[in-house]
Image 1: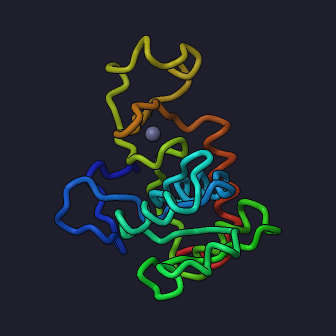
Image 2: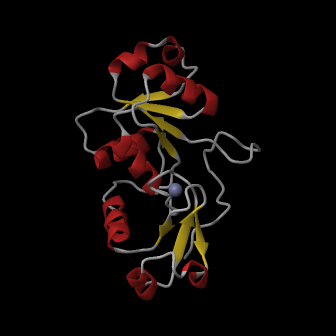
Length: 176
Ligand SMILES: [Zn+2]
């Protein structure tokens, strides 16, 4: 089973625009949630230290859903009048609980094709031979399948880290 290179984006907001924008824009406190959303197959943008104004501007530009744990943000006009679709994420939840909360709120499944946890880019399977010298020798020897992020170029394989994430995602209730 591989991940589709040209995966359709159910629920995507940018049909016909080529490279689609993110589906979620996370506030400066939700970097962990952004990584878990990507593991669950959603393109989530996170910018370290982003302020409220830039955050809202990004949500307007991309038509992404804004996720924030900052109650004050929800008093902004663009959010109150629903120009920007936004969800308040309770701060006391851990990252996995936050992921579960967001998916439940929008009735979204954990998707079978994870995205790059570092940047949210799509993963494309690559020929093993083509990445020799690029992958750590131990990983190259131990695994047959490798994927590369189409956005940041990061190389991935189903190692320990990968399996741990997959196992945690299975804890999400009501996954589709
Ligand atoms: Zn990436």
